[in-house]
Image (cartoon, rainbow, N blue to C red; front, top):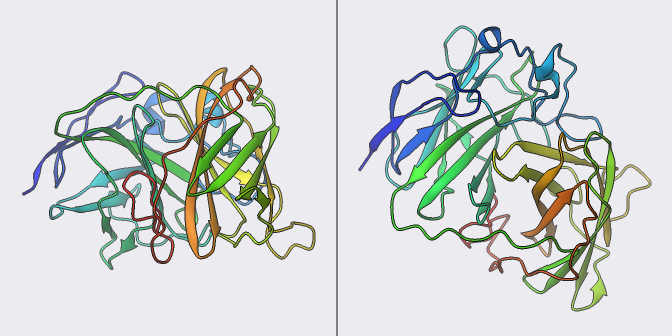
Amino acid sequence: MNTAIKLSGFALGLAAVFGAAYGVGQVAGPVVPAAENGHGETGAGHGDTGGSHGDSGGAGDAAHLPGGLLVSDRGYTFAPVDAPAGEFAFRVTGPDGQPVTAYDVAHDKRMHLIVARRDLSGFRHVHPEMAPDGTWRVATPLAGPGVWRAFADFTPTGGQPLTLGADVTVPGALSERPLPPPAATTTVDGYTVTLAGDLRPGETSALTLTVLRDGAPVTDLEPYLGAYGHLVALRRGDLAYLHVHPDGSPGDGRTRPGPEVTFLAEVPSAGTYRLYLDFRHGGRVRTAEFTVNAGTPATASPTATATTSTPAPADDHGTPGHGHD
């Protein structure tokens, strides 16, 4: 059964409300066109250059606004639509108000949909399929009750990369989960991943993640979305979205398939961030998670344990909260 969706103001204090429908609950996010809020660019989305998605070269303050804080920007709007239970469906409408149907491929896909619970206890990265009318559909990535932030990360053909975000409320009993403390090491599915490097606000930081299995270095990581690793950073509180790029790519003659994967990141402010590293090995994608304080060393405690996932066919974990496709 579908329930009503309500889009309402969230990040900048301005709001617009419109009706839609969605099979799991309510969606909320700011509908603040760039022309109204004075922000010409958000600088978010999948790009082709090193560093994080924090600046796409636009003018004004929004050139430094992280992605995912707006549901509408530069004339593009993230618009959920009617969907059967168990399915997530949406369109992206363009400056002309019509659904966008032309997208550039970035990191092997035309659309990246990332969802995370607002307490950062759940995370999924999936790739919907688009119908000819511009509607994107995917099995719902929302793993259980709570308020989730959904991010549509894409590049419209002829436009600049964008990440638009909206809150999705899944009804039901909810127990808030505390964020794990900062740690340099985490484990997932028998893999141990160690993080080296610090996040320094306003500066480009090198983060190196080393993958081991049963104590042995993994030297045959498999490409995933055009790289040996895929890293997303979310800022605690507003869940500002930072897609971080790897330093190098498979086949470039210098980048090895593990055990180390290095990323270049730039965070906009001091604070606490949650890092999600997707890596593929043995035909399965796993997610290693870290809590990191920007402005202080990333190695505040020696170990942490990520939510263990169960391998599934292709690129899908099969475990709610940590899946891919």
